[in-house]
Length: 215
Image 1: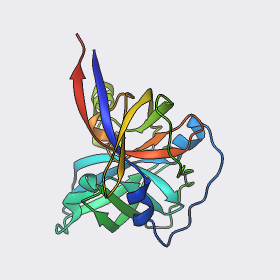
Image 2: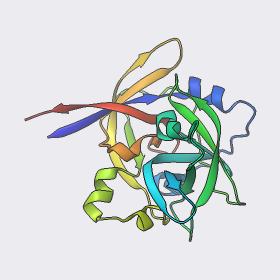
Image 3: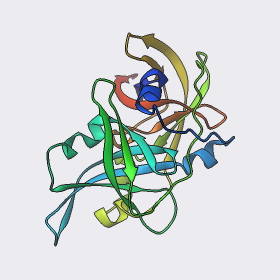
Image 4: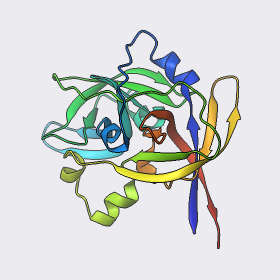
């Protein structure tokens, strides 16, 4: 059995990145919180054709600001042929987005939705979660996309995020940020997505992980 143990970047770095923005907290359960989660896509376009370069996950912290991982959007920097897009969990279409903050040391970035689009913000929990608590990872894992045989057109069409359940299994601290370990299964496209507590509040950002084999 494969168990993903992602390392989660917590809020010391996230709140620094969001300095000057307003966080709109609203009580929500897992399903409601998932509606604030988006697929982040990076597309190459020559004007006539578009090609998907990579994708990850993000979540709305204000109606037009999306948190994701820096490594999800790093290819945007210095390449004018690449376009960022935000594809919500529901609705009819995605939105173009612009990179407005980038912190590779913390593996965090902010995208601003353009074109008049908006998404209901998720609730952030600034406290310290206890070990052993139930958690949910929400995002767009690539292995699920592959299993469903999704095309590029499907990937830029709104669809519900995948929710997986696990438990907190420890933590680490550094000068820059705190990290958590958890057992909720992830795929590569989960990068930048939220880790939720049982009340649907964000307690961390899925950033990277290790895989251990048990049998």
